[in-house]
Image 1 (cartoon, helix red, strand yellow):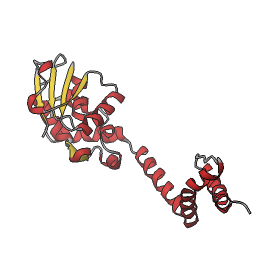
Image 2 (cartoon, one colour; image 1 turned 180 degrees about the vertical axis):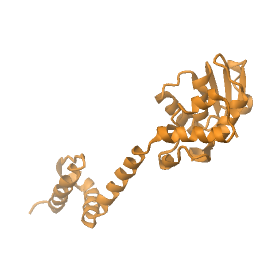
Image 3 (cartoon, helix red, strand yellow; image 1 turned 90 degrees about the horizontal axis):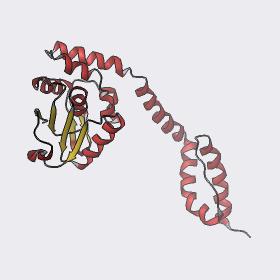
Image 4 (tube, one colour; image 1 turned 180 degrees about the horizontal axis):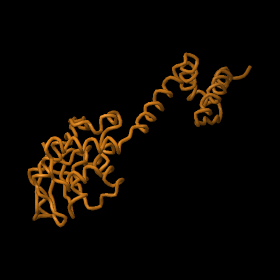
Length: 220
């Protein structure tokens, strides 16, 4: 007698419930229908645990995040700025801004360890975040002043806009890729750059509603 699905499901549910509780997860059992629905998940977790793969997966995930947390981004940022000086960047305002903006916040997590590498890094929508030297060179050429209103074409990650936001009064930046617009907005908002406005649109049309501008920069 009795429901065999209920018996088997309860067995694996108990094993998996004990297992998952140690990772801060809870499974609630409510009737035989829920057991039938959740049993495949329970079986997967149980098999992973038995094979040792679950501990490996969790250890790798936590270990990777811990490794990133242990990186001294402040020191890496200072090294990047020193490298920019050696490469001929002399604009102290730009250098100071780049020593302030946390580039790691604009780089995908999978590339955090290379956040201050002087090279381009991949972004969503098959785009890239420009290498620090290119950003410094372009912004230095603008001879930026604190009262400036600047138009940027090609927001990308939002990093260059953040550097501009450290220097000038207002930044208007245009990006055609919707995915990158959200990517940049999220990071700029989280970091409190209230003087940077992001607009999705065709960069060749600029942002005429906010014109005129004191300077315009176009990202490749």
